[in-house]
Length: 328
Length: 181
Image (cartoon, rainbow over all chains, first blue to last red; front, side, top):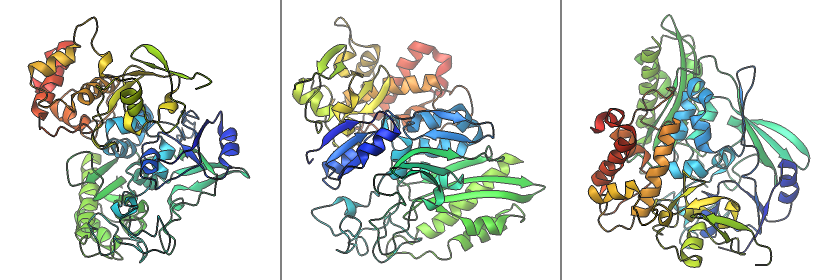
């Protein structure tokens, strides 16, 4: 690990002030950043510890939640309102990492965690455009069964590893930011970027900008929701494919639906095509299958990950079927 | 070295390292000589370095920078026994062959104690059926899911689950142990 100085932020303003220094990085729970520093993939000159900032979860009168950036993953998953009104979020968090890591990791850190692509991690042995722009991507011809089938580019096929973020994408969450120039809010689905020609750019964050909170808008049918994660072993593994979904059915017809996919793209993948196709249609397997197929129509498999396309389709259908059963 | 910032380890206040790069794990093992906490992978994948934060919150000491825990209380495996008496969970591990080589055991013990606190608090897991319920039924499926962050290369998992189950039954009675009985 390279040498660095350590400072604790008193509040968001103080964090932004200290974070403006060259080579500064914000430190949340450290579960990803400390590991990346040990691998010398991240080499900050200064860490600004923001894990002591807002750990509040505010239930607002309109039914929305405002989740402080430093709220631990466990605290969000166990919150009564999250379990009752947004079970897809509680289940997504519970499916990620391990009990120990969920106790350490913050909500903002989860959002900003970096890909677990092994070529990104292999600083000495592999080429990676994300780590070193322009040098090539060894994953393209390498071991890539875990990699992206949607929205990838010829420069990067990495996936975003988060489970929580898949639920936040489905929930139309909003990211609250604070920088030297003031505050702003960004829709969660627009926060992470697809790789295109610049996989080193992963979010719309400006340099030194801090996530202060995640807002989760009310969702009337949020209680009828779930998260399903398909992986190589039953627990403590990253997703091959995951689905976060909420469904509202009236008289056998889909009146509203939210669905996002994990494990398939450089960012949590909101299934807008599927959602548009299903609204107003019968809530049955035939329509679910057609919409799931349409959602994956633009998928581009690599040599070893074509299985993700039918797996994603089947998982979407199974999750939606389950939500119909629960609802009726 | 100049200003003393401290952390409490097993009830004793000690000075934190001046180099912020030192992990909580290396601090315990290399600087305090508390070698019960083990370094397995040093990257958050195995759980061997699990310790308890502020009483009953399980964390991975390998991914923790010691300086980040200034003023906090850490319990390592050395802090579980009292007055020469093993913790009841340690006794259960012995009785149920909850280990073979023993390398993962300190992490398993701290993790299981943290897990029991989470169960009591109603923290849901991925296998919890009714995620909105106030309390969570103890089951071996819950134990296996919640302990999945602790690997055992000897494969003593059945003994570990049995030991954790017996400890739970001792505290809460058989009825609360669900399918474990």
